Every structure is written in structure tokens, then in C-alpha cells.
Length: 224
Image 1 (spheres, helix red, strand yellow):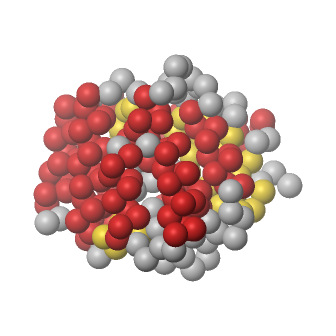
Image 2 (image 1 turned 60 degrees about the vertical axis):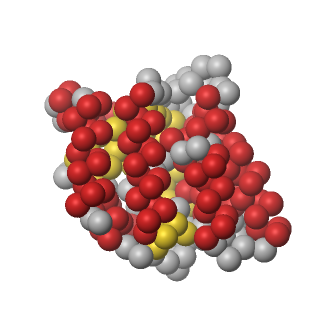
Image 3 (image 1 turned 45 degrees about the vertical axis):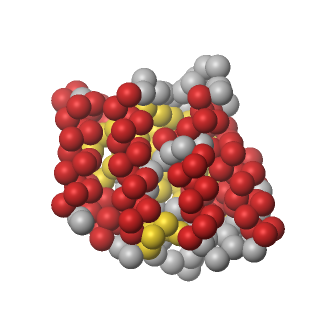
């Protein structure tokens, strides 16, 4: 099989693969409406624990994961990857209006759903925008186009020559939780070049830091 199927019941297996995102300085494409975990501080990620009804064991698992997926974790890596974060603006508008947003990649990493209430999700997006503005490790593309059909139901992460994962969990429910992960060279290469061509089909101005930062803040404030 080209992909290994993982649901929330596969506790730990998805996280092992997702950690490869910062395994070396190869480029990463990340398509998702929620903030990328490495753009958020450990303090911000810890807030998720206080707004979710988690047992002590679930909190312990969360702390293991967020300790390795926070901004501080990325800063400790010597050779950081360049992560291109692609946000489909229609999806972002929808997420910003939700009462509660499931953090899809984090949920698959810990093995159970973790939600961010509306205000916390907006704070996460503001932090992601601010980190992007001052960091060389990220670029953000805001687009009204889609790479994948039914984009709102799919998140995609592709690490050049390393791994690729497609997450099918919806943002409002854990129903149908599914992650497909591959380390097969041909599949990774095909997905990576598709992502690269999609991003390069946009003008450089659409990735210009100040303009993206300003537009992200506008989208966030327009939802309040």
C-alpha cells in the first residue's frame, strides 16, 4: 500500500511521522486552515489543555506532543526547514466563525480530539501571523484557489524526500477521523511537486510578508 491508514486509535504512530517535519532543513508544504503548530508558543498550546475536558493521562500525552511541536521546539533545531503554509481564505473565514475548531494535526498526534474555542483560535491565528512577520522559517500563501477537491475536509503536509500525510478529519467533529501517511519516495515526490507548482503559480506579491500579515489580521478582525 502507498499509504498507511491511521485514525485516532493509532495513538503515537502519527506523531512519530509528524515529527519528521523538522527532522532536517528540507522544505515543507503545509495546507491547513488552522495554525501550524510550530508557529505557536508552548504557552499558547498549553491553553488548549485548560479549555478541553481532559483526564490527567490525556493531559500528559498532550504535553509530550506540544513540547515537541511548539515554537520553542522549532527554535531548538539547528537546521530549520522552510515551511510554506497555504491558507485557503474561504476556509479560514469559515473556521473563524466556528464556535469551536478541532486542531486536526494535534488531535491525530495525541490520539483524541482537541478543540480550540473561537476566541482562542483567533488568538492562535494572530500569534501565527506575528511569528510569520518576524521569522525567516515560514512563508504564508493566502489563496482563494484550491489544490485538493473538497479542501475544507482535507489537510495536507508534505516534507520533501521524507514523508507526506493527508488528514481527513473535519474541523467541527471527530467523525470519520482518518490520516493517510506515506514514506514512499514516488508518492512523496508527486505530492511535493504538485504543491510546489501550486504555490509557484501565484505571484511573489501574494507571499510578501507585510501584505500577508495585514490581510490575515483583516480576516481575523472581520470575523469578530
